[in-house]
Length: 92
Image (cartoon, rainbow, N blue to C red; front, side):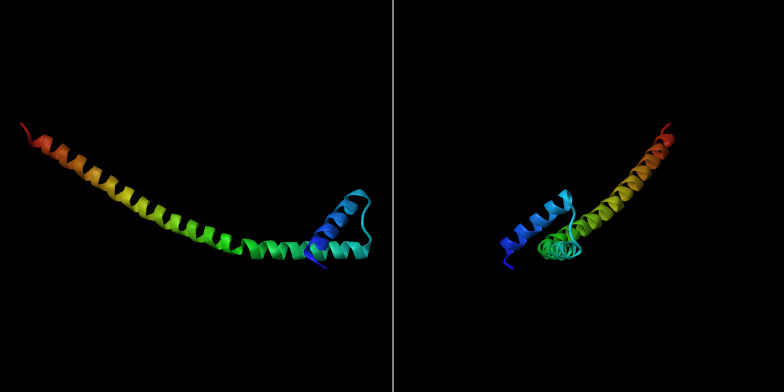
């Protein structure tokens, strides 16, 4: 069956399913068509899904690096405050 015929048949079965129900054979045919559509979508979306996964992992790595940098800066700020407080306490 050609793709345009499959699409037309799929739409016809879906409409009949909503309106009056399907026979067992028609339900099996619709189930098969749905599986074909899902497989095609998965194949089509796979590269994009993989790219998004890699981008997310990269962003998570960047976030971890930024969190470490923030922690180091906070520690440095504490050390500077302590140093300034000590220095000011030594001034008569």
